[in-house]
Length: 155
Image 1 (cartoon, helix red, strand yellow):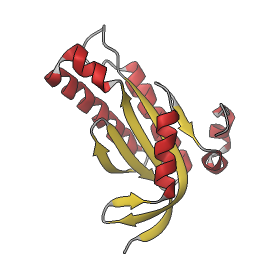
Image 2 (cartoon, helix red, strand yellow):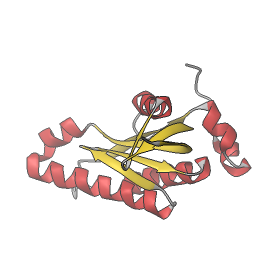
Image 3 (cartoon, rainbow, N blue to C red):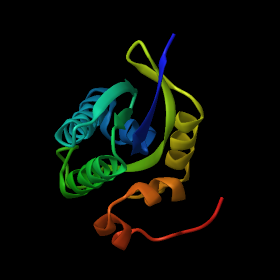
């Protein structure tokens, strides 16, 4: 039986990994994706997060605060946008990120619940280079983060 907690959930996903495999070939693409995943995991740990799992080209992490989650997400975006993860000037890599703060069930180093599904849906709404979150998560943010958040729509 799991325990219920309130956490920020972040999904970070490499955009267009299928095209990477077509452009770079299997080995180079796998290495490129792994470098991105390692970068996302590193940013998670730097902001006191916990990597729950990696699924192919996606990382799922949790944070005790929305501020840490958004700080890590921002750091991920900055590093990937500013880095050359493919090692080639003609192949750029990008990520998209979704985040939600809510109740989850923690069980055996994994998390479950509606909040996880919402965070995952935010990722699917994000475009390359974006961090998408929910209004409830924004309410949890400090004033500095609230000042740079903008509403892009209501779903």
